[in-house]
Amino acid sequence: QVQLVESGGGLVQAGGSLRLSCAASGRIFSRNAMGWHRQAPGKQREFVAGISTGGSTNYADSVKGRFTISRDSAKNTVFLQMNSLKPEDTAVYYCYAGRWYPVTYDYWGQGTQVTVSS
Image 1 (cartoon, rainbow, N blue to C red):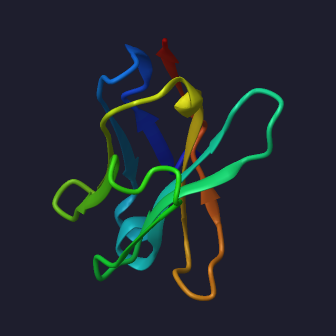
Image 2: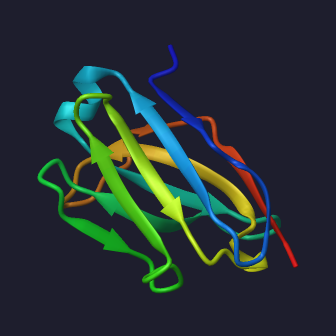
Image 3: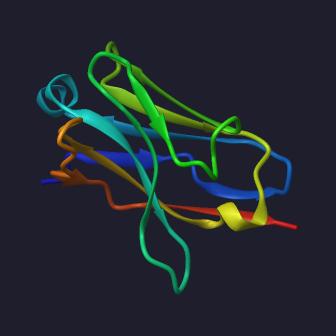
């Protein structure tokens, strides 16, 4: 049973923008922090951004000032607005849901590819 469904990935030139979406079931969305990790080829999966049920946010240093995470309770969806994209942002982006603190990752989406060309 798929509980997190990502969309919005694609190919973009450096300096461009993309917005990722992650739709969750109502039960998961209302009870969990949500966020994004990414995994580039040959590298470990890394944290990108997270948002608590109350709207607190956290970002990796590498994306601060360029990426913005938000959540829409009416749509049970979390968004990742990615601006000023760089080739090093190329990765598969995974949505997660879990506890804010201590952090846990209890649910994962299937991933969406983001490719930034130079």
